[in-house]
Amino acid sequence: MCGEFPPTAFVQKEAKRYFASVLNWAKSDPSRCVRRVICVNSPEMREWVHRHHAETRQIANYEARIVEWATNADLLNMAIIDERIVFLAFSGATDQAIRGMSIRDAGVAKYFTDFFNQHWQAATRLTAWVKNAG
Image 1: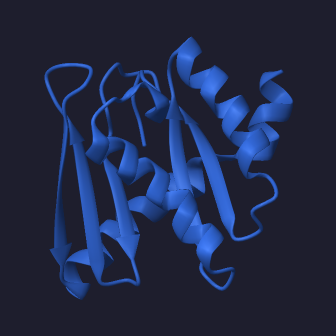
Image 2 (image 1 turned 120 degrees about the vertical axis):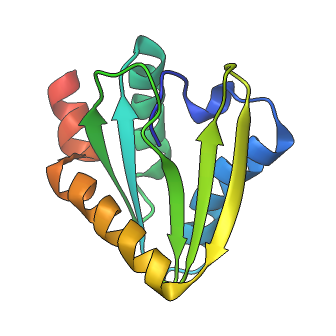
Image 3 (image 1 turned 90 degrees about the vertical axis):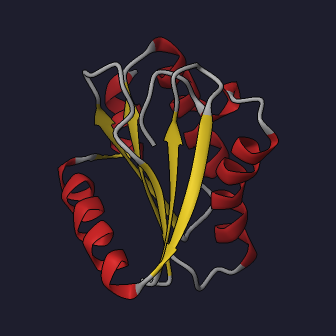
């Protein structure tokens, strides 16, 4: 997830459900693995990341990493499920515009997984980021 605004800033039911589902999915089954890349580029996002760390550090199968994001535009919000389903969420022209789509194709999911892994490898572990960000 990248952008100037944290997930808590969105008021659309669909957006709230999308962001809440990530944690709920991890909490509902400890055998699942959830990896999340979070881009930070505003004071609001920095504050949210600190709260998010406190809320999630006890979820053993949830790992987040941080990218310092200099561009004031979203990268791409996506969820890859079971290496075969990709859910994409796109921000729009206004602060509250967010829309999504899903693609059910293992080949496509592989491309998005490779793209995600590039950012994952370059990102800083959430715990380390919080410790160094103060």
